[in-house]
Image (cartoon, rainbow, N blue to C red; front, side, top):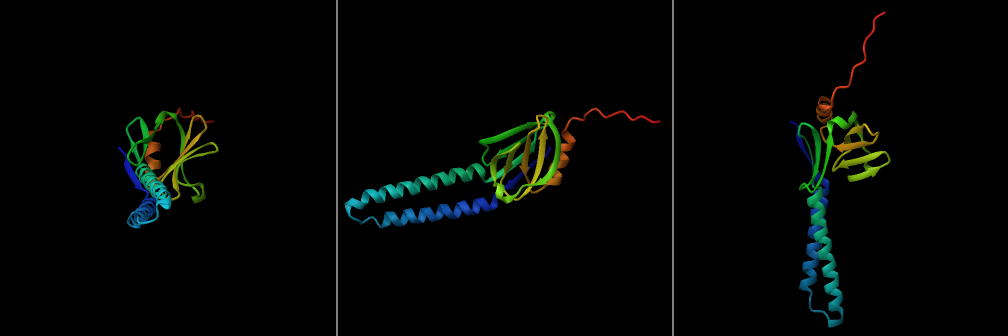
Length: 166
């Protein structure tokens, strides 16, 4: 059984630094609390918005801090972060699979693209799964050859053409 988790190291570092900077600004704003009563409302609003932004950053980080890809026998499963965002790809719906490169400017996370979608948290190496419907799914991984072999070994074998000898 295949089970691999790819961490989103750069994303995690970025969000943690931004989160702590926001906390420092909020903390400094609270300590600076001796301002006239007219601007107190503005200060409360600003600090509240910063607190909400920090909370949203933590939620996004918990949802996308990693991408876990695992095999359960019948399906290839994808799970972001804590597991609230998942996708199952039944092996019997897969037509073809290959390794590919996903350009950095196309972004990370879950993305819709013309003809398919992408699930990735880091790097540009992906395994591209083409479904029988013609759509593709790009799965980001830091071990593309291993994932490719796992998927190829699970795709139901198709009828092989007869060989005729003349």
